[in-house]
Image (cartoon, rainbow, N blue to C red):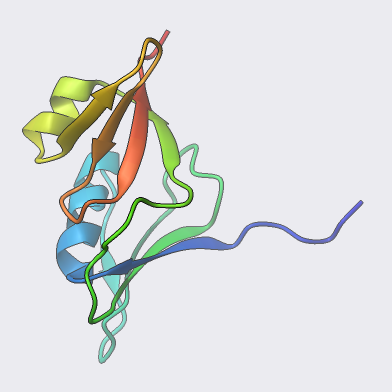
Length: 110
């Protein structure tokens, strides 16, 4: 058995504080920041398969579709009310984008 395990998910962002706060609000989590850095993170989110979700400032905006994305259970209208953008609908899920354009899929709770 491998000794490897997931540690954290790191996301580049034009405004790490803003997108970190957006996702913290989605998950009902506290947004953390180490003094003197541009890194923000959420942690201890029930069901999250890694220790932390980290958001770091980068100078360039997102310009192309993500090569991978996250899938979530939730309610599409709730995400839209929070500022997500509807990209397209599939029979079993809906593809949305967060305020920085990062794609994610929402599956209904069954």
